[in-house]
Length: 599
Image 1 (cartoon, rainbow, N blue to C red):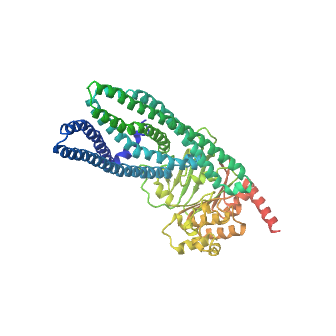
Image 2: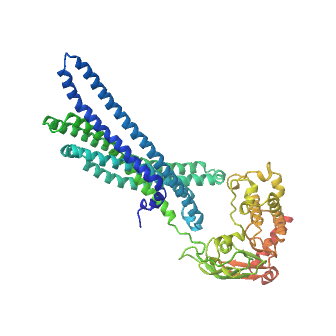
Image 3: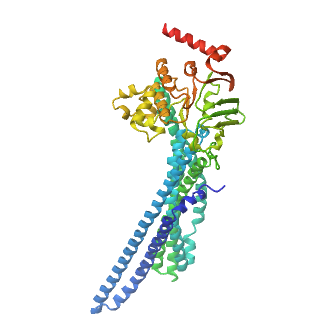
C-alpha cells in the first residue's frame, strides 16, 4: 500500500498549474538571494584596493575625485543588494500566493471527498467511530495535511534550491572550507532521523487523545439533559478534565521533541560559522582566500541557517501530516456495506409490492441471528403490522427495506426486484420512513417537515402537519412553521418530534410508508387521530407499521408476530386473537390497561 503522503499526490497534481509555478518562484527567489553574497564579496575585496589607490594619490586633486568615485561604487553595491533582496521578496510573495492558495484548494477537495464518503458509509462505520473522532479527522487532521501540501512543500522547495545553489558556489570558492562548514551536518542528519520517528508516533497519539477529548465534549453536550437529570455535572466534568489532561500530556510530549531539536540545530549552525571563521582565517593568512571570500562564506552559512533550521520544522509538519493522512485514509478506505449496484435493474418507478423471502440477518459473522428465515409477502397498496417483544427484530426487518443494511441470507424484493439490484436513489426515493429514534435538524419546523420534499409548498406542508395531528400545536408556536426547534429538536416534546417526523414521511407521497414504532411517544387520543388520518392512505400505499400497541396495527391487512427473530404468528387481527398466542396475550393485556385508565 502506498504511503499516506504519496496518496495525496493526485490531489496535488490537480493543482499543478499553481504548484509548479510556485515552486519555480521559490527557485528564482533563492537565486536572487544567493547573488547578494557575491556582490558583498566584490565590495569587501574592493575596499583595500580602493584605500591603496586613494593613499597613492594623497595630497593631489585626484584624491577627492577618487573618494567620490569609491563612495559611489559602494553606494551602488548597497543599492544592488537592496534591489536583489526586493526581487527575492517579490518572488517569495508570488510563491506564497500560488503554493498556499493551492494548498487551500487541496484542503477543499479533501473535505469534499471525505464528506461525500461519510455520506455513503453504512451504519456499522458510525457504530465503530464516535462522532467526535470523525469531526477531529475532518478538521484538525485535514489542517495538518494542508500544512504539508502548502507551507511544508514550499519550505522544502526553497530549502533545496538554497542549499544546492549555495553549496555549488561554496565548493567553487573553496572545497576545503566547504567541507569544514559541513562537518556538523552528519550529526544533524542523525538528529532529524530520530526526531522524525518520535514526531510521527507522538503526533498519532496526540490526535487520538484529541479525538477522545472531542468525543467526550460532544457526548456531554448531546446528553446534557440526562447529565443534569442525574446530577452528574461534576462527574462528567471530571471525565472531560481527564480527557483534556491526556491531550495536554500528549501535546507536551510532542512539544518537548520540537523544543529539544531547535537548540541542537542552533548549536550545529553556530559550530559551522565558527569553523568558517577559524579555518577561513587561516586560509586568508596563507593567501588562499580573500577577506571577501570569508564574508561571502559567512553570509552563505547565514543563508543556509533558515533552510537547515527549517528542516526541524518541516520534519515535524511532514510527520504530523503523515500521521493525520493515515487517519484520513483509514476512513476513505472504509468500504460501505451498502452501495448502489454498478449494473442496476432498469426500474424508474416503484408500486410498492414487498416480499421477504427466507430472510435472515446477523450483525456480525459469528454473532447470533437477529432475524431467522422470515418470509412475508405484502402486496402493493396493503398494510403490514409488525408486533413483538423488545429485541425480537422488528426494527431490523424494517431497516432492510430501504437498505440501511442488507440481509445475511435470503432476499428482500420490491416489485419482484431484489433491493440489491435497484438504484439506491430510486429505492429510497420511493420510501417515507419514520425511524424509532426521531432526528430533527436545528432548523425551522417547516423545513424539518419538508426535509424529504424540499420542493413542497407551504400548503402541502400544512396538510402533512394536519394529517400528523401537529397543525394545531404549530399554529400555537410564536412563529408558526418558522419556529426553530433547536439542536435535535430539543425545544419540542417527544410526541411533537414524532409527529414532525410522521409529517415529514407523509409529505413525500411515497408509494411505501414505514413507521417504526412511530407512535410510542403520543397519547392514545392523539394515536387514534393519527391512525384515522393514516387509514386514508391504506389501499393507496404500501404501509408497514411496527408498534408495541395492538391498536396501531389491528386494522392492517395482515399482521406478523416476531419472537426471537422468527415469525411465530401471522394473519389478520381477528384470526390472531382467536389463535390465543402471544398476540392475543398482548391484546388482552392492553385492553385491560385501557379499561383501568378509563376507570
